Image (cartoon, rainbow, N blue to C red; front, side):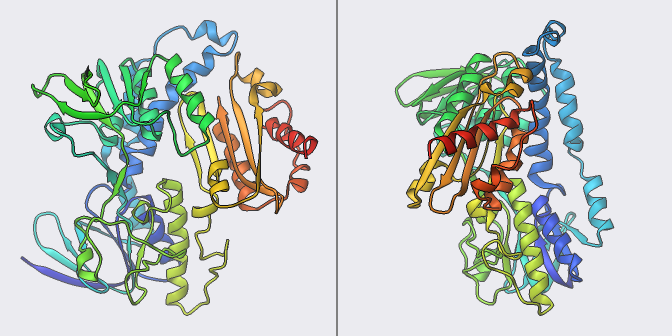
Length: 480
């Protein structure tokens, strides 16, 4: 085996959105950077998560919106063209080719190294390159692990042989199954149940808990469940899967439940959590345990490795398993690596330029179901557990004029969580049609810790759904 050794300031493992951004920000500070990728440049988000899933979900939402509007409803009586939706999805997944993103890496002045990279001791990465051979990359300043996460599939009898869908298959399947069982009640489960039901599959959700979206405000899961049920999805709560079997490779799957019941479906999707992609990463060479999540400080520097040279950003550190948060961490980490390398002081105070504070206090997330669920910051339960003195304020979104104009029979709800001692928002949640675009205003309010007395002067345009902000503030002031 031939071995080539090359030195860089920074070596980044993983060329998904997090790795790309970290490499770019570190390079912008004058450092040389190598970006190592074993699959497709662009990572999970581009090919098996954010982009293809939203490409599947947007057409049915657009059709549903049309059917909720008089005049448009009469012109929107047909069914979705499933083949056209899948082709649209393929386009947004770049047909699972990374030529464009690889070209961006080259244009940015970053060296792309294709192959499987593993840590090989302090500041060293060994890359098994395609076709044989190995390259050893040494890092003068830092190595950053941005390898993300993978679907966590439970160890159930018969499951491996049954070839279940995970999020990857659910976003890249080339045909619509006649029936689909979805195991799970979180974001991936809800979104994929919505998408494949809209494309014509009979969908049954098997939810272990009592409802959907357990990490959001309870009403979010309730309203999303109502929407899925209205679309024809069957939701079974308290359903624990004990075994799976697919006797014939091309035949249906039988799911056995803990209560003795069975469900037969053409395909089964397990959306039951994520695990870090660190099991074959050489962590043992730097004193860490393969397969573990990597603990980091607010600059995304790994805390359990001496010398301060190892960083971990994105899903792999488990702070916030969302693409936009990974990219945020990448900006923070890339800037911190550059500052340390150039002997510059770091700004690591809360909300400082080298501290990923938003991971703790202001994580935004949208669930692209119909209705949408959008939230940022803390839920009421999380705030109470943290010992905050809070007040929640709710409002029926259908009561603002913009909602009625947006859709006949609009259903939705908004909540803000107020810190009573400091007079600003700790969190906000919106559920309804078209509420995703309300979320950034809430994110700005939470991150900026805008006093509610000042927020009162942020006048919403009329007639828009954003008028719900005024109604929330009116309710808060009238009952203070």
